Image 1 (cartoon, one colour):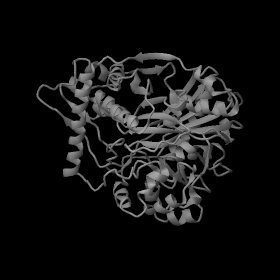
Image 2 (cartoon, rainbow, N blue to C red):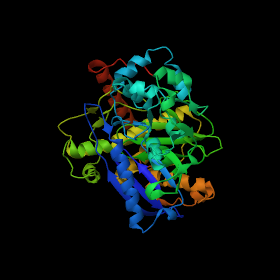
Image 3 (spheres, one colour):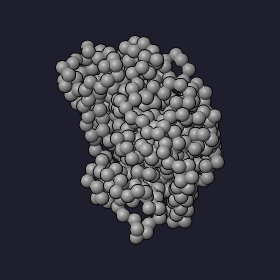
Length: 506
């Protein structure tokens, strides 16, 4: 069983030995927007949904806990929750990875002594994207919370920590752990030692006592209670690392890109840690218990599928997400229109959280079809920016890109991605690779699958797109895209909050 706790919903999925999906249950949870740029989740609601989807998926196939070999968890990564040790009650709503309330705090911290050590220790830039600034904000802004943390009355963690603690008993003996992939997204873990770093904890003002123990991605953390009584909770992976694992990208040079709410391209660099100098993240890909960690370079794109959602809900130009491909096909090209969707700033490779979006190239010729095409193409161009940064950082060269996520059903977009990257784009038969990766990891940890090669044999091609665009056209349009990005940043510098220092600390 995989429990896939995502940004907008939670799913429970059962997989068989061939890696085929047997049953799925899913529930959405509420998105709270208390202020512009703020996004929160009710962790208690998410836990209730986990209980419901687990019961529902077991009921759908007439199964009980004794039929489940193991449970693996995949989760939205940088979202942070703090809860009471004694009651299991969250002290306030969780702060979601997209939330930008800590931008001003991060700007101030960037000028503090020791800030330049953060990328060296953690592999990450100092950004409001990650968990540590969010946790620091909670401790500072919630009355009495820091004192309670110092007394050991509260616990903190990303979503997999919250779920594992509840699954293994909660207040009645719940295990407080995180895995190395999620810990590597906090700004608090030393990326080489794979331990909480004392200097980073001191810099952010985080008491070590409230943090979970860091464990491998594939190992049994404890046994389930309730509807999963006695079932090993045997794996945890951040959602993008889970997708990498589900796509069986186990060797250095293999890469996947998930196209969902955001877009995340991960390149496996093996057991070698590659420190980025071009705006990428060095992150842990996975770690089998007792073995060296495998690392990855990651390019995180904040806005991908959510731009289509805005096109549907914010502008009302389509009534369903699937209609955007049909609308985009009514024109031959974008008409010279480019959209840079910096709704929550620009992530990799720019790391400008204060940036805001721009539509460039508008003329009276532009129709909603051109806009639809520009929406889809923005995802392709952002992927190209990330791949260029990966090529600059690493000697590894991409031969093909494995893709997954809801946007991969859009054939026009996938062909465009293949064209602008100039490599084949391939999609597997099982599209739910985040969930599959969590299931694979758990099954491997308990011996349900014997080795990585056995998992590779489960990967089957469903669709392939090969490059078709002429190189001169590709590079000409890419230059236009870079001009649009420069316009976005120039706009931000002139009318926005441009206090963010340049990205020299990478």
